[in-house]
Image (cartoon, rainbow, N blue to C red; front, side, top):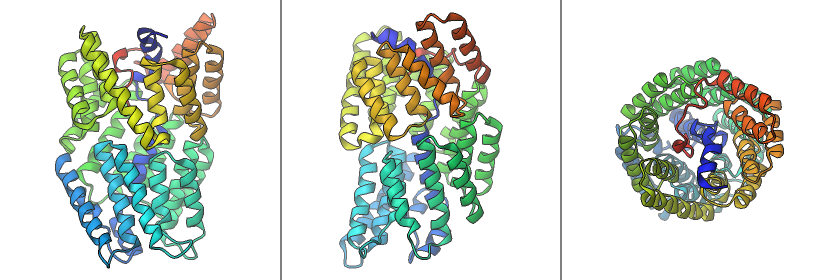
Length: 452
């Protein structure tokens, strides 16, 4: 499949698919950091990294986290260093990864825990933190195994009991078991309530197509946080904007994205969304400048892909190819660091600019690791690229049977049905997509590699 054709086939990704792994990983981080008081009670000394999130712009917030990381490393190197310092260092690196998007931070979070286990009695250690860090990196089986250890704790505190069930719900969603996720979240809510719980419940409601229910849970998350940081406020607006965008409510989404950028100036995730809406509003040169700035500063390949597409639209073929090449190099680096976290994104690079067969191989690994809606639909797209629309159709039917209500699966289904010559069914599938999102087919295909 040539790039232009791939762009057209993959135009459904211009709308934010529900990135279960990525979204839940971010939520897991909020769960840890939104409850410093509970965490301090559970451990011998308070968690310093929670205070770092009070910075009023992204640069200050990152600087605060870096200060905490340096202090924790110094303490670990001293005779006073203990397992909890390693645990806190891991939590700090997870928070840093949220602001940098750098897989090296996610890897450092897991490596920090290795030292914690080395300082713990046999069988003991920071298992809950390991589960959270592993899930953040899409290492689903490792997260589940760590949670099994947590379940073996003799007298787990309230925080640990509730958080363990919530992360198990993350694992269940990643494995495509939404009923189990709902049960686990209900159990967690009976033990404790905190913003991360409501964020997860919002995600689950969105999976079912219950947009208003998701909005209510986001409101509960907001109300449950008595002292929200600028980062929390920015993430809240981003999530609500993504809900609006998935329903075609672009004006509402644009307002939420703008509020996210105001809540935490310099936060690249919010800036990406603001730039996305600028491009969709026809302000392509301005949007391109923003995407290129994010790509340069953070090495973010999704921004590189959008920059490539917009440059191509403007006739800048050499610059477009430059961004494609840079994105490919970055995904090779990330695949080497954390393959599980990179498979889904790297296969998109192959779908758009590389080899369909390589995309299919990556899609197979990705869906085996976490057979959720996103991974299943990416596998469907990989089969489309490999000229097997019948397999793609079967995967879309699997998504429907699971109860996932996502406009993109109907758009992908329509492409498969068209390829099979079933034009009337394809038309009906597009109508179902537009019933969920009236703007499902209105996005600029040059934004086809843009993610939340």
